[in-house]
Length: 173
Image (cartoon, rainbow, N blue to C red; front, side, top):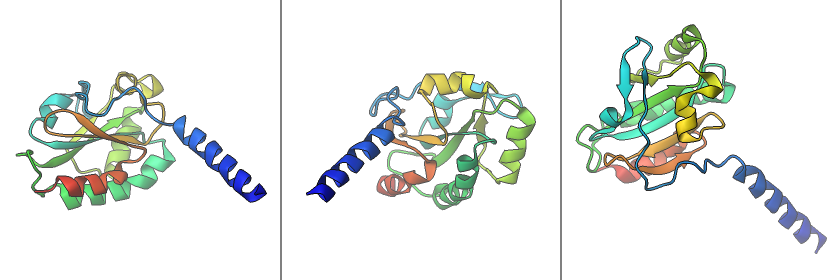
């Protein structure tokens, strides 16, 4: 009986710890909030234009975030595996939009290059934890990701982008 109560207490504590990391600002099924920020070249990118007719994995990360950098090779594999696939209701397929919480442009650009983040959509306001994008999406930890369908709605939230694979499989034609 003591083991049962100890296990129940452990489950409660564990679920409470994970609950504190859940993003509560973005609601599933709602339209993805617009993001309009610079890419490394200084060109403004708009999430709504990128996402039109695409499945988008919106990935929040930073060059200084060790878990993000450790996850990037799996994210590159995910992109390579799905970038040329055909998805339901997505004429333009799949892409990743990376949103950096960096403050230094040089570190951001170097991490993109070093980690071989080859997709064309990288954006940041170089605001660090005061990033407007992080505020808009309620991002309080990185890595964190959102799956957006071609209709512009957020359908899943992840603590790490590579968790999206099973959901991407379900969306294939």
